[in-house]
Length: 212
Image 1 (cartoon, helix red, strand yellow):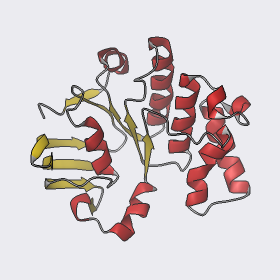
Image 2: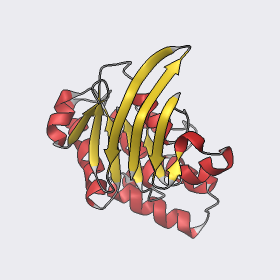
Image 3: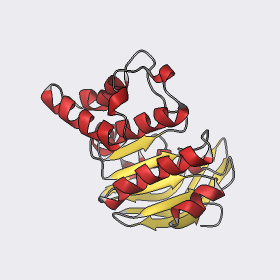
C-alpha cells in the first residue's frame, strides 16, 4: 500500500533522511521511531505531500508522491487522516465544529455532517463534550478530538505524529487503544514516536528510520 524506496531528504544540503526504505501493508499498524530530529515528522509529511523527497520514490497505492501534481493533492489527503502532536484545534470552534471542519472543506454539509460527527465522537467517547471549546478540555480529550477530526472522513490511512507526546502514561494508553480500535476495523496506521513505553504497549512492527 505504501512504499519508500531509497528516499533522501535534505534542507540546505543537510540530509535528515538517508536511504529510507520500507513498505506498509494495507490494514497494518506500524511505529516509526528515532530520536528527536531524525525526520519522523518529515516522513509523515511526505505522505500527505506537504514535503517532497530530495531523491528517491514514495508510492501510495497507485500514486507516485514525488511526482504528484498540485491539483491531485486534495484528493490524496481525503484518503489520509493526520493527527498532530499539538492538536491544532481551533479555539473559537466547539468540539463538534472542529471535527466537522474537514467534512465542510470537502463540500459535505447538513445531515451527513451531523451523522458522521456524532458517530465518531461517540467512538472516541467525547459526544458528551460536543458543545465544549478546546480550552475547556484536558490534553487527552483534546487529542481525542484531534483523532476524531482525522477519522471523520473514514480515511484509508491514519498518520499520527507523537500523538501522546504531552500526555501521561495512563492517558497515552487510552489514546493508543482508540487508535488501535480503528486499526482493528481496517484503517492502516503509521504512528511516529520516540516513546519506548508506547511502543512496548503497542506490540506492533517498528521501523527505526535511522536504520531502515
